[in-house]
Structures are given as C-alpha cells and as structure tokens.
Picture 1 (cartoon, helix red, strand yellow):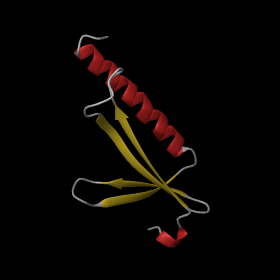
Picture 2 (cartoon, helix red, strand yellow; picture 1 turned 180 degrees about the vertical axis):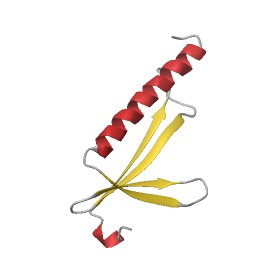
Picture 3 (cartoon, one colour; picture 1 turned 120 degrees about the vertical axis):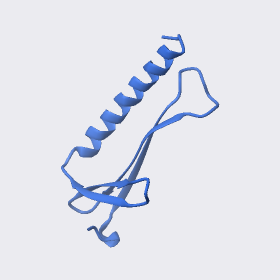
Picture 4 (tube, one colour; picture 1 turned 60 degrees about the vertical axis):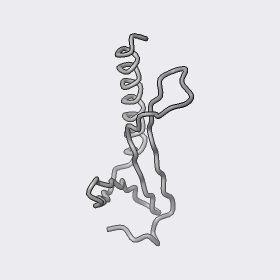
Length: 88
C-alpha cells in the first residue's frame, strides 16, 4: 500500500486513436494508465470496471516501456481501422 503523503508526482496517460484527416467525432480510447512516483519507487495504478483499484510497485523504466507499447498499439489500431475502411 502506498500512502498519499509519499506521492511526489502522479502521471496519467490516455492513448486514443483517430484516423488521419479527421478532427471531429469520437476517437477510440485504447488505454488509460496512471503512475505514482515517490522519492524512490514507481507504482502503476489500474482501475477495474467493478470500481476496484490495484496499485503495484514497478521496476525502473516500466512507464517508458508501457508508453511505447501503448503508442505502438494505437498505430496498429489506426492501420487496422484504415484498412477496414478501404483507406490503407
């Protein structure tokens, strides 16, 4: 368990995908991730659909690795959406 008083920084990253050339309409939210940083530890925070929350201590570099994974997944999603629409 992490005490709120120990948290120095909180980062929330939302990865969304929108086909190229569109500026309005809904986008697809692919990932919503939150990270907490204390003086010496990094934690990931995951909210489940049932309202529960899981907080896990992570290794150094986990935030960067997850962000790369999310961005690659968003690109893959967009390519698939464009192919399905006959645009790719």
